[in-house]
Image 1: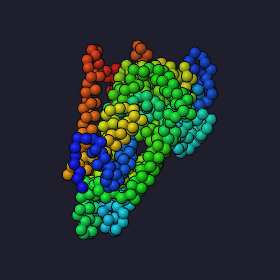
Image 2 (image 1 turned 30 degrees about the vertical axis):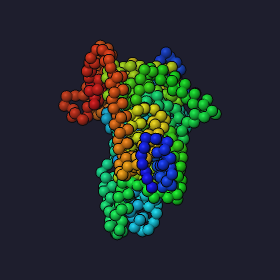
Image 3 (image 1 turned 90 degrees about the horizontal axis):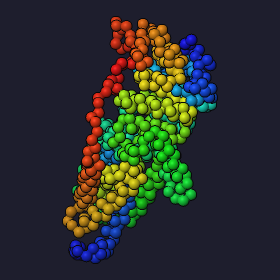
Image 4 (image 1 turned 135 degrees about the vertical axis):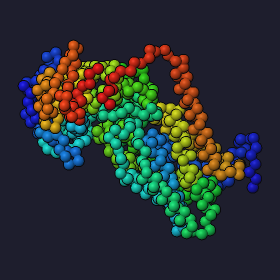
Length: 309
Length: 298
């Protein structure tokens, strides 16, 4: 089996697709990237990246525990991630009455504690299950080898369900993200919507973990979404762009992992980071051009109008 | 003339709308209402009537429950006692005929969602699902876009509605949020300190905007204010909440030394400057926290 990279792109792709494991990796990657791109965009808007990160890490003890008990790792990933989502949403949120608009304040110390405990449990399960060391690496940093057809089916069902619920939540989710108080006055059950979203985030993190590993889920959940928010301020376009970037990053990452000795997690993360850097640079330049040439205006006089504050 | 808590019926003053227009139908009606927060009654025995097209300010010291009054009318906070009717029904959330602007700070500069999208959320943000661009629905989404554009024109936000809202100034954000509250043609607009943390120019222009919406669209406006002066020329009624009771009436009858002294239980002066602005001052030996925060003179 020779996997030679040459400069004939068609030939490279044919080479890639000639291996069943690679085909499966691409299928799984496509499902996972689509879900992560969409859910990730809302996660970034809601400023729940810390919660997302924690959910991804909670997948690790799930998967390790499942392996220890001889179960399918997918059961562990999804089970723990969804349970984690429910726990996080049940944590009392210190919602200051004036908590900023346009997103949630970061859920704080409690989540961090849950996260650390989850990691500790993961390592406990790993040490309980001897002869596990190879698996540990792929649990944490992902692998493209050995994704089974059955695993793909599970990912497909979870992913389709996730996207369907996300579409159903749609506008009320955006409303309660941007403007929770008005949304509540308009009859949106913001608490329920928030919990539902965290469960979706759990499913997305659990699914993505199976490809990129628990530690690098972020590459797919955050990077494309963060890049998309920098490129457009239109929510619909943002979701679409985030999904497209996630797909592109995954496909390229898997191809690079195939032709190089380096693991998929590294490639996906690096590509995601590059996309984020490029988008940030674009935003900076675009904003500077928008401000330039500076329009002369009289200096704003400082008035005492807000003295009551 | 001022009637105190429990006996504020406004028959005499209700028709005192600008231009002598006969006041419209009852929009909000409270009778013997009370609200509690953390087990403590914050106000009680509040009875009032607001009619269509009236511009009403809710004034009072900090922490007296002005925001809670709005929330009770919205159905976000249950009444501890008494009765309430809002637009002919019991107060409940999800009422399309009320527009609401909560008390808040500005959007974070990093919020990258356009002003139009924020206004659009006021139109159909509470409907499940996402709008489908497919054919049968195209008509509906065209109506929505048209109404959003209309209301953005109404508040004069055309030039920045397509920018990310985090990049707009406080006054611009406030205009867009007022547009959001207006987009479904509400009959009642509940505004919680919309002028707070704005500069004086923005305060004046937003006040004028609210007044013109109130008149042209016949919307009843209930506005919680820290400082009554920017809106004073437009007001039909003032509701003054305090721990000692509630008074409602025309501003020149409520914001008087006698009434405020009664409400605060301590002597208070109301001064008027040459432009007709009001300055409320307590006696010198008054503990600071008891001072009414009605006006800080420029």
